[in-house]
Amino acid sequence: MNERGFTIVELLIAITVSLVVFGLVATSLVAYQNDSQRSFQQNDSQDQARTAVDRIVRELRNVASSRTAAPTLIEVASPYDLVFETVTSTAPAGGSANPAGAARVRYCLPPDPAPGTASKQVLISQVETWTTAAAPTNPWPQVAGVSPACPSVGTVVPAGATITTERLAEHVTNRYAGASRPAFTYDSSSLNQIATVGIDLFVDGRPAAPPGEVRLRSAAYLRNQNQPPLVSLTATPTGGGHVLLNGGGSSDPDNQQLTFKWFKIVGTTRTQIGATGLLDWAPGAGTYTVELQVTDSGGLIGIEERSVAVT
Image (cartoon, rainbow, N blue to C red; front, side, top):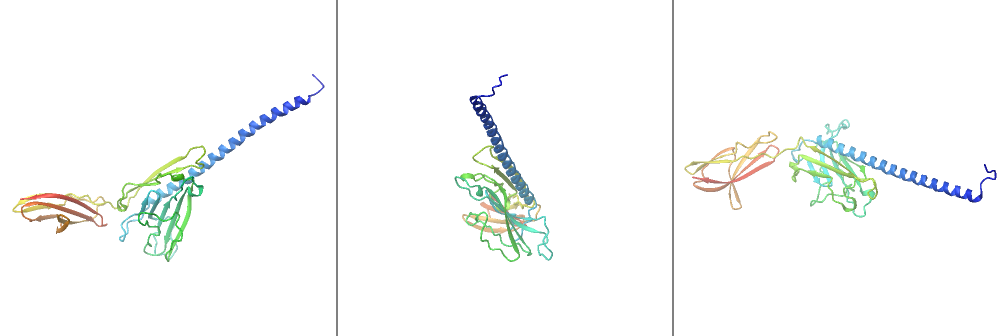
């Protein structure tokens, strides 16, 4: 063994090699730490969104029964704005005239135009509770098909009501940089006929970096939603200018009581000719346009129109 030790050159080489090795190790550790941080952020965002989806589905399944004044369970139904009444799991304070704990909830996503802003990539929850017997007017109505700001600001809260706002889930990218991917979908364009609400959230903790976004989907069926009647119309000429109009085969999916109205249509004029399920009509020989309107106790109407030949 050489007892002269190491030369300066050898020490410099050893130090350089050590620095290179330590640099590579440090770079790997930093990359690993960054990947772990991004994965943690993505998993946390997914957990928030999944919890939010479960909450929305649960509240939709507890949706309140139709009110006589406004027979719709869903009050606003747009791709990024959903408002409905439900029953909360927390009982109101003593003395409340709202013992069932009915509440109105709103879920919305604000616009997020390009290039995208993290503060806009959020699912907002707004909850209105009240202590009065009657539900207050919806504070988040659409005007000319346009929803109020999400979340709404400066909303006038009526006496006995309280509105709370919460950022329910972060990093929801349905509208990132101007994208248009509906968060809510419906099986009907008519509020009083919506029976299924779909929820579809895209989640990405860092849209410009891996890992990629995750899609969370679910749906809820509204058990209390009133469905329109199914109309059945038959016409049987009986001679002598008479015809037997029969709407008795009409039915209601919710087994509600039905009422009937018969109309003769001439051009744009509609003239009522009867209000029973079975009608013996005597207009005289000829061909006529007849309409049957069937209405359930919830106010929904089914209509069928037919040309009838009378002998």
